[in-house]
Length: 239
Image (cartoon, rainbow, N blue to C red; front, side, top):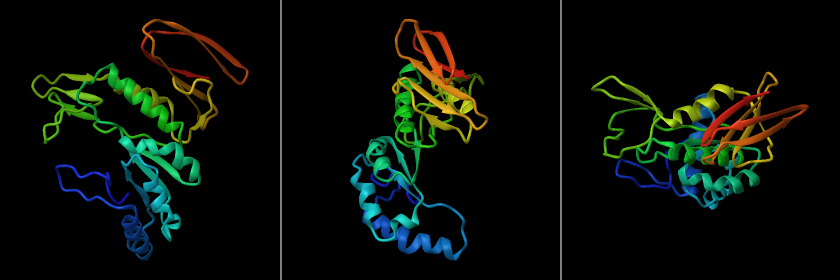
């Protein structure tokens, strides 16, 4: 992806692009140079952080765009374009390139926000989802003083390591849902994700958003399972 966050001017060196200009750069310069130098690397549109689908539409309308790129990478508000763009351009790959950074809450509310984003993205065509800060120190701050969320917090003074709630959410997915898995349709597409793995197993990741325990029934093929989900919990079942 040629440029991170193409529609934002932050407080550090950056470069915003109109979709027409990005298409000129990719189609007339970047893609031809890759071919000339025999660089076997895919070019994707992104990273798109603009919530209006017209940005991606305008890029694809430019001459040569459809042949030059293989996919679209979105992050933050760019996730809002997925329902429309994935439907209109189903032959391309899609990726969520950066989870929302948060403000160092590092609590269950962060997990809930990320879960909702993951469900939205997978149900609208993405094949991979990237978390942003894997490890931060005890301040959780960037060099410009923004305290953000992370999966692991390491206290430099005591050596203590803390695994946040989001660490376990990402572990449920990255441990059980292996490369080559395929998303399956589910009856509850807000609280459940299901995948068929390359070895034929079905992996179901289910969230109970309620404070109380609740019974839940699953049917996959000829398998029927009834379980009790603890309140406010993420669970993985493997069939």
